[in-house]
Image (cartoon, rainbow, N blue to C red; front, side, top):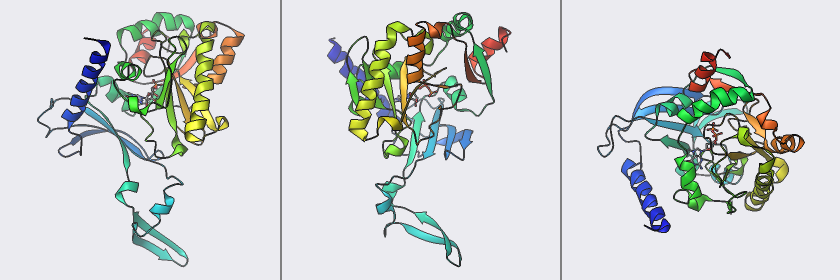
Length: 319
Ligand code: M7G
């Protein structure tokens, strides 16, 4: 099979799998557990089964994330129209409180489905205590790396993006260079309805970089290329100026194929906190100062109580 035929066959398989799920609604879906909820981000993380669905393996778990999305300046006009039904809750002097029922189109709930979800996906979305871990480079080599080699999330979804068998129509910009090239596209966390919560990811084409820990001065051209071209592409496509953008990497990430997160500064995106997010501009500057900075630096990160990596640090007497 030629590589084009392989791509088409792979894409067809993916489409069939998606179709097989028949996800036009949640008819028959049973929620088995509420994994987490967050009132401030107005989201809930659920585990459940498509129990009425005869075409798929009934025993497999699904993780469903429901999230109310921000308002957009472009649509408030249509929101405040005859299509919005109002039901009075209370009126006092000049103050009124109503339940508003907007038009279906303006009332979408961002819905993410992971199916079949692995044990690790369920853990990732389950509410847990978090702990701080300080990882020296020796700890990385002796504890983290062996753990990652034995157990980590599949990055098949990343390869599907890079070889265009998934999300190809969503690509915002691509630099095809094998060494310093990347694909820029909307992150799964962004529904693209409004720029106020803009969230993109730049995924590098090369497949040998797992995370921040692998970066050194050989990678400065890649990092600078991502920085410059993403800023330009976002300004052209979404009219968000560079000063309004946050470009950063996660350590530890969930997926160990090097990628950069790009979010709107106004958006308090999950994963922008200290001991998780590292500004790309700082990463570049650190490596410019010391070529092997990330092979020297102790990095402190957070890890959930039941995460396998935390258990390995505990076993090694490092916690
Ligand atoms: P990370 O730092 O490895 O993980 O970032 P975390 O932020 O989840 O801890 C991976 C990024 O890729 C996250 O922001 C995800 O929302 C995003 N992402 C994950 N998946 C499986 C997909 C996908 O299939 N498509 C797209 N476009 N983004 C994804």
